[in-house]
Length: 308
Image 1: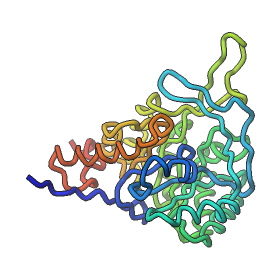
Image 2: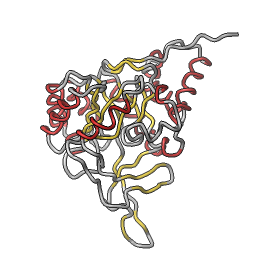
Image 3: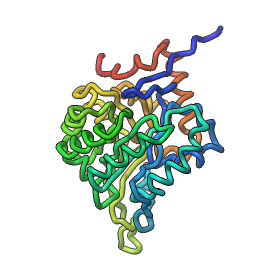
Image 4: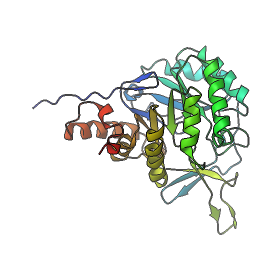
């Protein structure tokens, strides 16, 4: 018996995605790194590694440490800078039929505005993800995301500099993520993504020193999933914006939890390091879940657990 193919398409703040599975910034490079393992066109969108105005070499090594249920990282936004990204990475991504969402980070509010302006004029950019939540940089990043007023100021500056959809990526390392989400929404954000990593650290008991060169790092992977599902649940109740949910998604079952909590789309992050086809496995599992439960539209899942 033939099965009716469910509609997996979603609209995230004006970005039309053929399916709700994308990549978490910082875990998928700019695309070429994973192209040998999967057909990039199958992704709903690609969120590329964080970009800054000027190239960054990142934090001192070691910058990664495994934990029992995830990893700690302190990469420090290593990237080639926006000009090389536009001239080298975007032409490669233009070969694929998928929305390209660029994660942007800055030391100052002006940095974000300048990046938004430059990327708005570059061909092939579908939207911007505003990173005000990175815990691994000395300036900007989580500093902006920890203060609702500052988060709103960055959002307004980016919105004033671009006509592209603006997704603001929030940090769980705050007293009230709902308060930040509300201010960002008031400032004009088109969508939210959450969560960035949870601040943590590890100590080498033989050397009696912190493991990471930067001492502190961001924890990601299965260990943070309950935190991420919780904040998606809370923010969905308070803010009427589409949410890209992420944090420890390894399987389709993980992704379904995020949809039921309130996510419109999901991003796969740390799982890519273990299984480069993790996005495809999650996508196939979502499709199977919809079939098994007689659901024709992925959008029917969003926030469904809040209605029962």
